Length: 122
Image (tube, rainbow, N blue to C red; front, side, top):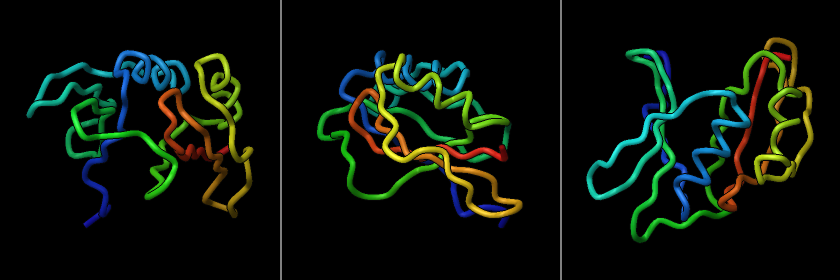
């Protein structure tokens, strides 16, 4: 097994706003789907890679408690962090060096009120 991660859901009350936030911050396009009673915006991935989606459905609420998902933020975390405020988010923990070979991380508050991690090599 190369990774224990298979899929993740990021809860949203406003799917379009949340999708625009992540598309802006991560500079990616998300695929919109309606599936299993939920509206979703799915993060891009190659076949066989782990991925996930922003999900809007009854009973799912954004928040800052619970597990933290760390998303790949490209080659330099600073680029993604510069886009967070304009996209409607807030930086909760600044870019911080983890250790050699692991790169950097930061924690943000997304447009929906979720605490999310970002990670990059630089």
